[in-house]
Image (tube, rainbow, N blue to C red):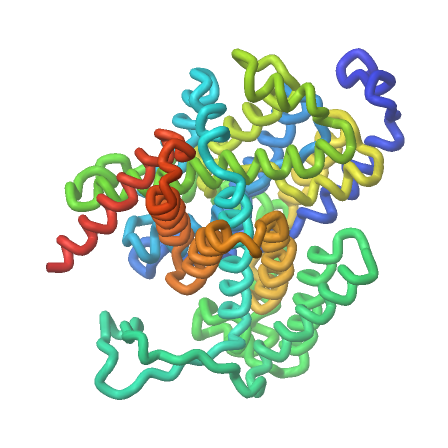
Length: 496
């Protein structure tokens, strides 16, 4: 153990590392319930994305990614499909852009391969140096606001009113309205909405009291309350819109729940519905969507890189896991020499694993800081977390009993945590404030992470050019901005 993880060198011991690993697990285990609830929305009635398969894929990606982080980088970080990245996958790539989930998985695999290439060639370091800090902070904060908005919407807290004659029916279920659609708060008469509010209150109270695993406890508590309400006679369809019509009472609902060995085996095997389901042919078949696909991949790559880097630097600096010399070696050295280099490589390679089993980008979770705060300093912490994730496979048959009104509060609170990134922005400097606001605001307003990133890039370059500071803009920024502009032009042309 000492030889593998160098516990004495990093000032820790086995007991401390085990406690840290358990702490990290409980702070981020909510992802195994939240991720399937988000990604399943990328599917359609004709082409469903199996939530049980996603559940298993989430665990596999988390276990493999975390073990690579532990054994290759020897740092106390855990990985799982990233919040924000799963929203980008579902609501931007599959929703706004109109790609299928199989095509989106192909993009995730391409993103993972691209990240490996740019890491080995050193291009990643150039990208990190090219992106101004204001955009790094704004992208992180904007994704947080977007995730919170998804949570508010999934909780059923909003209703939208559109003026007559300003909307059109896309199909029997989908309405397209123009800017006259006005959001408002619902009247809280719906039991599912009431349950979501209870979930928000539980998680907020636990977070304020600094209870470890607050988000997971909130999800499980809300789910238990839901089960009690169903047992007391509330129609299950109030909480689960996807249930068959025959499941219309508590007896029929609870009869669907089974955690026998056979049920566990069947649920685990459901990963075959999501694994290796890449559609490269369909992704590049439509020439009108090639530029769109390219910009989506750029969005995946940039978000993946800076999400991980922000987590490592934000937590590693304070604890000494990554010191200033290590960060300098990462930016200026060649190859994968520093501890930070190895951690970034482990993070990027995990995305490929996630794509193969059928989930969105796998990334390092900032919740790892909870385990680090408990004294975790080596990869042994991550090994403990990975083992606990693996144990969760026995829960796969009952993933369906966690309603969206139980996971929606978690999204709202995760959004609160992620939006903290905007604290690093100088809001008194109008140039920075303009770039940051447009990046942050347009993500939830347009329901698209890539739109916020695109407009943020364009605004930044435009302001620098107008101010006569063209030399301050890195060539990579100019290239990415040009691609984003071409994408907007192609969208306009295709609508003519």
